[in-house]
Structures are given as structure tokens and as C-alpha cells.
Length: 371
Image (cartoon, rainbow, N blue to C red):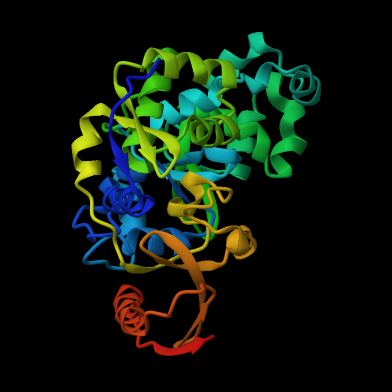
């Protein structure tokens, strides 16, 4: 049983507290690596969107900082939530990869049959991959060439020729390798254990509570269903496991009444949550930003049901006080804002955020607004 409290806050307060945790109000001064660590993960499928997700959370932003952080090891990139590429911190990323590995996909009969690698073959396969990467990052074709020199893996040539996307994912989940700097437009992979900041993959029963606590500290106040959405649906951690870890954290969590919804925060955060004041900050977020992805598009307090469609279509979003209120698009130097909320449009704040976006992108922007 989670400790009950008499704490009661509005959704305006709850979202304001979460905005502060996301470095969205006030805007933070942290490095790009610390922003990623704060968010837990940042989607890396589109580098320009990832740059913007980080830039909008920083007072000063220069192009290329994300690539620099990957090159110097202050960030890593691996397959994580929903099988997609994400930026993670080398200090905390292992907890999410531990959860993603929990399903042991490489032991499934369909996997074994397709790749002709038995579970007992997997340790040697992983070791051979690490050995192939000893001299530096390799592209998938280069890794395939190195691996298929081994008699035991020659049958995987066609798999590597086709990209080996599914085959290599568990190698990032288990910490054998991560994405390296791109080369000539191609992804590369590099050994992860050579990164001095990498803290490894913790034991699953250590990783689970850490991941849950991290979620509550950035995305709280949250319900247990939020946990199952983010760590269960997102990382396939398993409902039974998550419930067990939640039960074990009962002494660290407190229940909060948020306008009739029972949600939870880490006990250390209750005072700052109660002291939060509703925000009216306008922010332009890229599509699939962690602000909406972490809570889920079904969270009506962040994404009103009438606006779920543009969020699902990965539209760039306008939020006010943490609530999705519209979308924005850019074509060359023309910025178009489509206001989709019933409240009056905050024109002055939108103009200010346009100017801030222009600074992040390093170009002049001309604003047009559509009712």
C-alpha cells in the first residue's frame, strides 16, 4: 500500500511541476547530456527533431552539440523504447536497456529458427561482435563482413546484407555495442564498454525500481498505468514485474489527489509539487517530443482527445502550460502556427517563442497564424 497523503493539487500545478522537471519552464542551462538524462531518453530517429527537443530545453543552443556529445561519449545511442533509436545517458541508460532485455527475445523459438542461433550460441556471438569492433566503429556491411569470416556465422551473410536491423538490436540492449558517429551517411556501431562513462547493465531487479523512480521524478505525478505504458509497452518489461517493483517502492512513493485522480510522486518531491504555480508558458515542441511521448497520447490532461490525431501524426506541437493547444510547421523561413484550442490565442507569447525558435535554428523566421 502506498502511503496516503492529504496532498491535493490541480492539474495546472501538476503540469507546471513537470514542465520544470523537463527544463521547459523555466528553460534550463544544463548540457545536452544532462537534458537527455533528465528526460530519461530522447528519440533519435530524426536528428533534427532530437536537436530541437534538446535545444528548446536550453537557454543557449548551438547546432552540432548532439553529435559532439555522441562522439565524446557523454551520450550514447541505442535501440530502446518501442524498438526505436534513442539517445541515453551512459550513466543511466543501462537501466532502460536492462528492462528491454528482460524479454530475452533471442531465446524465442521464432528467433532461433530464423537466425539459426541457439540461446547457447548467443554468448559466443556477442563476444565475436565485440572482437570485431575492437579497432573502432563499423557499418553494418563492415560488421557483417567481419562476422561472416567465422564459419559459425557464415549463414548470416544474407541477414547482414539486408541490414540486420532486428539481429543487432539485442546487442545494444545488452551493452555489447552502441551507435557510433555516422560515416558517409551510414550508421556505425562501436563497443560500448570502451566508454569510460558507461556504467554497464545493472541487475534487472536493481534497474526496475530505478527506472520507475526516474519516471515519477520527471513525469509525475503519474498513475501506475503511466508506468505500464512507458516501461511496459515501451520496453516490454512485463506487467507482473512492474507491479512487483511498484510494491517494493511503496515506502518511497506518496499518493496525491489531482482533481479527483490518484497519482503518485516520490516522497522527496511532494513539497515542491504542492508549491508549484500553474504555468502559462508557450513552447514549440518537435513531433514525438518526450513531453507527450512520456505521458502517452491517451493522457487527456496533456493531449486533449480532440488533438490526439495531430500528436499521433507526429506533428510539431504548440503547448501552453503543458497542454497541447496547436501545431506549427516551417517552410524555409515561414513559420505557420495553427491554433486548435478554444481559449484565446496568446499571440504575444507565440511571437516570443517564434523568436526563440529562430535563435535555436539560427535563422530568421516570419510568423503566420491560422485560426
